[in-house]
Image 1 (cartoon, rainbow, N blue to C red):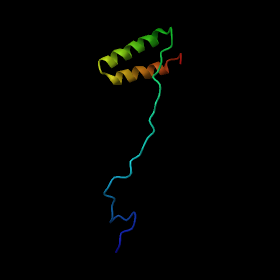
Image 2: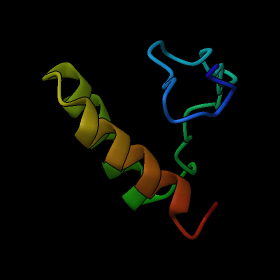
Image 3: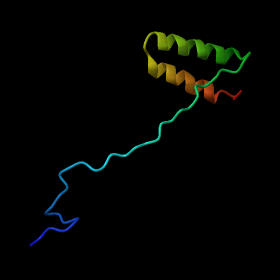
Image 4: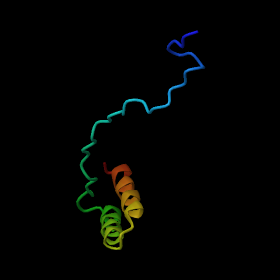
Length: 70
């Protein structure tokens, strides 16, 4: 008896080909000029990066991007 493709007696024992995803080169969210809240978030983002808290920095970028001025 020979094993055919997909036969349960011949399981795949090696990884599949890698999946290549495109690099996302999104620009960083820019605060609106003259907006106090955007300026606060921008400062928080810089402070977070300086202390190595990149999760908080990303959160600030999301909030800047979602701010009503944008």
